Image (cartoon, rainbow, N blue to C red; front, side):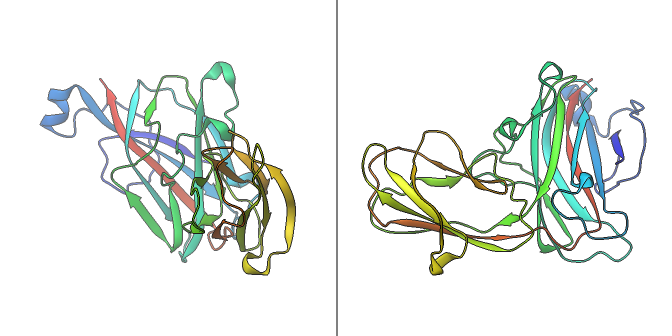
Length: 259
């Protein structure tokens, strides 16, 4: 892995450099007493496509600069012959005292957009919708690569309150179509789930709904807003595309830090 913290760089510049306090990029930044900064992490498959579970698909590193507010992210597949890839990046942080960060320390919350490539070679967001955009000195960041989820569809007439959890980071190597169906309306309600959509080969049944994120398998988490009030046989379905294609990824977080 290579890690860089830079200032005074053009968008998309992924070269290595120390932070040399090179001065303000523009007059507005100077007036606001902030300095544009970016950090880039590389995930290198060593010439072969990265796969979930490979040690190269997960990185933890310290943030040592002054407090930073993240304003953008970029992700590119930067091998010699970039290809359209499928990958999302789970981003978590925690304090040095709580090392290492875990999935439940997610910066990207429920319904928010992780850095991702969905059949493309590059992607960018200039306005992250994350739950947490602030980094403090000595925070630890963890980035983990996983599959890409499509939107959830709901079928039924009752309470529609299931989402993918903030901890969700699919690490299966096979594409799946998940279906979660209400199979009990006691207290709490219960659900069953499968990984083959309409075929409904149930992997588990009568799973009690809790107020927490619930792991189905292989990094797939779901969360219900309520433990009761659902309608029997209502269900949620979504496709998960397994991580595939990329040999070398560059993930960049951009922001402003105090000077």
